[in-house]
Length: 470
Image (cartoon, rainbow, N blue to C red):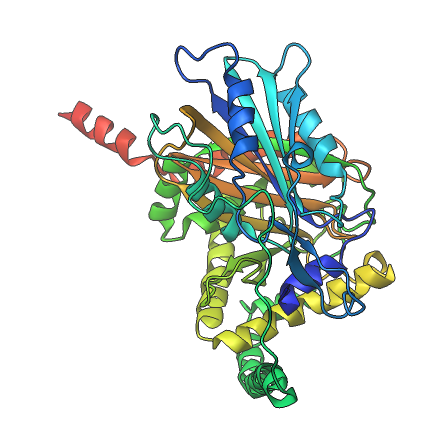
C-alpha cells in the first residue's frame, strides 16, 4: 500500500454527493484522412487491450480499519469494460450536444470502491470528428499531472499507431512483494522525521505570512475582504459547461505590450467577462471579485497526486477600463508568485494546507456556504503542448478542462494552452448560474476590448503592416 499525502487525502475527504471531487477534460479529435468506417471501434479495441493509465489508476482505495484516518492505495484488478465507455451524440452532433453530454457525465461522482477514473469515447461529432471525455479523482492527480499524463499518452507523430503511453499498467495487479519485518523504531522513523520537518517549517511559514500581509497589493490582505457574489451560493450536483477558444498569439501580444504575463492577461479576460455577466444580472459587487489561483509545484520524488499551492488575486471586476484591470492583476500576481517562490518546500506544503483547511472543514460540516467566502471563483491555467498531438493518427484539435466545485463556490474557470490557442472551460452549478455559456462568449469579447485598450497586435500582424508601409 502507498499512503496518500495530506493534500491528496484532503481532496478525498471533501467528496460529497453535491460536490464530487473529480476533474476532467473534454478533447476533440479530427479523424485521420481516409480513416476507415470502423476507426473508433479499432481505437476502442486497442485501448481495451493496452491500458493507458499510469499509477495510481491501477489501484483502488484500500479498505482497512484506518482508511478514514490514513487513506492509502492498493493494487487491484482493472476492469477496462467498466472504465472505458462508448457513447454517441444525437444529430446534428454539434458543440452544444457535446457540451450537454459531457456536463451530464461530469455531474455523476466516481465509484470510490474502484480505480478512480473513467474514459468516454464519443462519436457522432460533426465535421469528421470525435471526442474523448476523461475524468479522474482530484486525490489522484492535479492539473500539472494531468497535462503530463496526456503528453505522454498522445504522440507528436501522426503515424504513431499506439494508444498507450510508455507506462502501460497491467490489466491484472501484480502481487505485492512480501514486506520484511521491521521493528517499532524503524516503522516510526519516517513519520517522526516528517513531523519534525513540519514543525521546523512553521517558523518559515509564519515569517512568510507576515511579509505577505503587508502593503496594498498583498494577496493575503485581499483574502480578508472578499465580497459575497452570485457565485458564492450552495451548489447542487448538476453541472453546466461553457467553452471558448482564444488566440494565444493575441494574448501574448497584449502581455508584451504592458509587460505582464500571459496568465495575467487571461485573468483580466476572465475578469472582463465576469464583470459584464454580473452587470447583466444586476449583481456586480462594488468591490472586486477575487480568484483563487493554483500554482503547480515540482514533486521532488516524482510521485503522482497533488503538488499545488495557491494565492488569492483580484479580477478587477470593479474597474471599467480593461488596461487598468490588467495592471492591477499584474501587480498583485507578480508579488504573490515571487513570495511563494521564496518559501522552502515544507513551508509551501504547510501554506497549501492552511489555505485548504477552512474549505475542508466547512465542506465536511456543511457550513461552507454559510461562512464568509475566501474567494469568489477559481481560475487556473496550464499548458498542454506547443506542438500538435495525435491519438492513433487522429489530430487533437482542443482540450477543454472540466474542473470541480466547492460548496458555496459555484464557478470554476480552467484554461489550457495548446499550440497557438487557449481552450477555456467554464464549469458552473446548473441551478446557481443561469446562461453559463454567456461567460464563454463574453470572454472572447473581453479579449477584443483588452486588445483595443492596449492597442496590441499579434507579432505577425505588426510585420505585415510594417511591410505595407514600404
